[in-house]
Amino acid sequence: MSIIKIINGVARHPLWRMAEPINLEILRGEQIAIVGDNAAGKTRLVEVLTGHYPLLLNEVHYDFSPCKSRLASENIKYISFRDSYGEQDGSYYYQQRWNQHDIADDSPTVGEQLPVTSFSKMFRLDELADKRIISLSSGELRKLQMAKALGTNPRVLILDNPFIGLDAPTRRDFRLLLETLTRETGLLIILILSKRDDIPDFITHVLPVEGLRLLPKMSLAEYRKQYAAFPAPVLSDEVNNWIVNLPVRDLSESDFYPAKGGEILRFRDVSIRYGNHTILRSLNWTVHEGERWALSGPNGSGKSTLLSLVCADNPQAYACNIELFGHRRGSGESIWQIKRHIGYVSPEMHRAYLKDIPAVDVVASGLSDSVGLYVRPKPEQKQICIDWMRVFGVEKLADTTFLRLSSGEQRLCLLARAFVKDPELLILDEPLHGLDDCHRSLVRQIIKQFCQRPHKTLIMVTHYEEELPDCITHRLSLGL
Image (cartoon, rainbow, N blue to C red):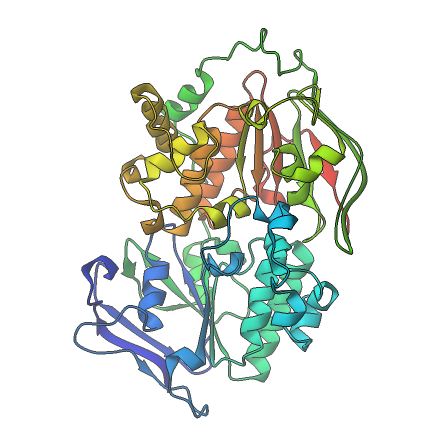
C-alpha cells in the first residue's frame, strides 16, 4: 500500500516543472533518500510531492492512515535548507547574532519554543533553554528545527541535507534517532541529500534525480553498487592557470598590513560572554601570514563567534585584546581597512542574503563587503566577477536572480563573492554546505590552489574532516 503516489505529475506553473512528468510511488515500510547534484531538481520534486506546487491534470495521492487527518499540511513536516538556518521572517540581518543589543527583550528563547521532550534532551537543547534563538549557532539552530518537527509526531518527515552543520557525535546520534523512529513508529522519512556518503543505513530506497528528471527508484544496495566508483573531478588546467597567474598585490606600502611573514591576527586572553553563556574563555591565538588553519569544535563551542571577531562583525572585539594585521582593534582603524583584506563566507551570511538580485551582483557585492549591491561595479570589476563565477562553474547563472538558484548554486555564488577581491585572509565557515560531491571536490582544489599564492592565509571551519584541503598547516580546536 502506498503512502504517496504521483501519476504523470506535471506542475501547473512552467517554472516549477521537471523535464519529464513525475511518476512516483512510495510504499509503507520504505525509507527514502532523494539524491542528486546541485540544481538537479531535488527540491523541485519535493515541492510537488508536498503539494506546494499544484499539478495540472491530477493531484498527489496520499494515504496517511491510521492518522485521522488527511491534510498533507498536518501530516508532512518539511525542513528545507533555509528553514534549518532559522525562521525566515524578513527581520533577520547579517551581523544581528553578534549585536545582542539589537535583539528585542521579547525575542523567543529555546525553552519558549520547545518544551522539554525526549528530542530536546537528545539534542542537548534543554541546556540552552534560556538562550535566545537569534543567538544560536547554525548547528544549534539546525538541531532546534529538527527537534520541533519531530515533536509534532508527523506521518512524513522530509529533511533537506539534515547532517550539514552538525558535529560528528550529533550526526551519529541523529542517525540513530531516525533509525529508531523508523523501526518503532510508522514514520516515513525522506532525506534530500547532495553528499552520497550521508545516506544512512536505515534508508531502504533511493530516488536519483538528474537534469530535472526523476530516475527509477532503486534499493540502497543497488544505488551504492551503481555509484560506488565516483571519479574525483580534477580542476581544469585553464582554471588552475588562471588562479596561479592572478597578479600579486603590492602590499609593501600598505599602512594596514604586516610585513611579509608577520602576524595576521593575535588574540590575547580573549573572552566573550552573552548573558549567562560564556562562548570563549581566555583564548590566546596567533596566526602568521601564509599559515592555513583548520578551526574545529562541537556545535556551540564558539567557532563562528571567534570568526566574527576576526571579520570585525562583532562589537565585543573592541573590549578585547585583539590585533588584526598588526593593529590593535579600536586604535583608529576603520572596519573597511580590515575587511578589504578579508574574504568571508558563512552560514550566517547565507541566511541573511535574501536579496533577489542577479547572481553576478551578489558576487560583485564582495568588492564592497555589502549584503546587496549598492555601488555599480566598473566594467573591469564586473569581468572579474564573471571570471570567478567561471572558476566555481556558475558563470551561466550570472543574470539569474539569487533566490531562483538552488541552495548549492547560491553557495557557489557566495564562495565566488568571498574570492572576488583576491583577499589576503580567506575565512571559510562551513563553505561546502549543500554542495554535491563533484563541487565539494572542486572547491577544495580551488582553495588549495588559491592558498599557494603569495600573502595568502586561510582559516576554515568544517565538521567533516574530509572537507579540509590538504594544504592545512595548523589546527585550533575549541571545546564547550
